[in-house]
Image 1 (cartoon, rainbow, N blue to C red):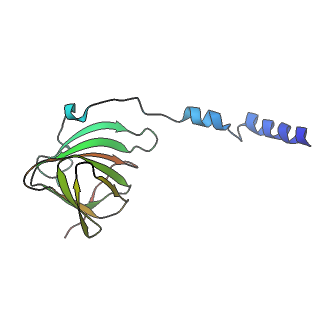
Image 2 (image 1 turned 90 degrees about the vertical axis):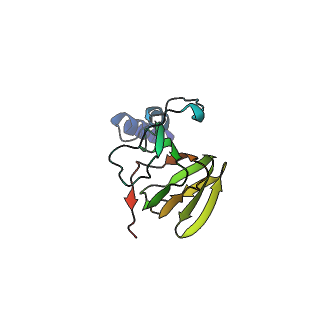
Image 3 (image 1 turned 30 degrees about the horizontal axis):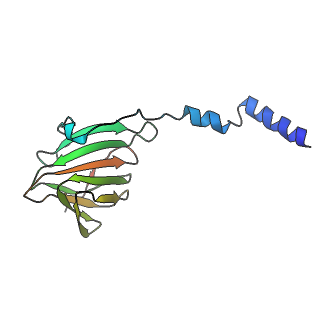
Length: 153
């Protein structure tokens, strides 16, 4: 009986019906290694296709997950800016690297300061409000491609 099961499984593997686990893991794309100091990042404007983004916002793309298309990036919001209420299809996580920011997340206002970790579930309405006294820098990552759906008042 044992020989028959082994033979049947071998036939399924050879015919392509079963893929060995080690083979599937080897084929999964992996991100490239990276070590960087965020303070030496190159900052760019978000682009002309982002007209509802706050004036003066700057981004620095770090990486894109080869499996999900989710970007990891730095975002620098200028003092006194506000990012209008919006939502994303995929969850977003952020760490406040420098400064402070208020985030209204599903109707509740939170203050996040340097070192704060923020989880924004997919489709959760949120807005960012930066105090007048200093810029804020966020390290953000999305679980899938970045999309922005603005919520009109």
